[in-house]
Length: 215
Image (cartoon, rainbow, N blue to C red):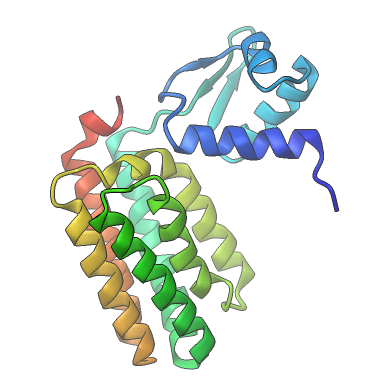
């Protein structure tokens, strides 16, 4: 089924916000957005409402919309909650993971490894998400997977820059390799521990470099 124009622009704006095209607290002017995405102001108004529901923008009467800016406490709280929910998902899925899913994760990891080796970070965020999505897609607790995706979406615009932080490139490869080894062993407790360690590492990086990542 063909996606509506509203859905297409919503997805593109969400991607743009998460990738830092728009800065935290940046004002979003309907007329400018309509020109940029070649659509009507009414469509932009609908898109902004959807983005508000995803906690990516705020809309104030008579003031308009702006990109959400999270303070450090917000970021820590979101990542701590994500660690618990994602740890639960990995613990639940790991014991029954299929070999084809393990192979898919290995393939994604190798692409991540190559991109980082080549200093080509453009696709890193997508690869990172794809790696985790293999596990999410195998979890039968839809409430948990929807929640973790929402939590990730709210901090994506900050996560996107972390790969440029000194030492983070090597760390993320090690963390994902450790997660993969735990998944391959089908050890739910270990998989949960490893993914929590990864998320806490991201949290600590975001905490330490918060001023840079909010630029």
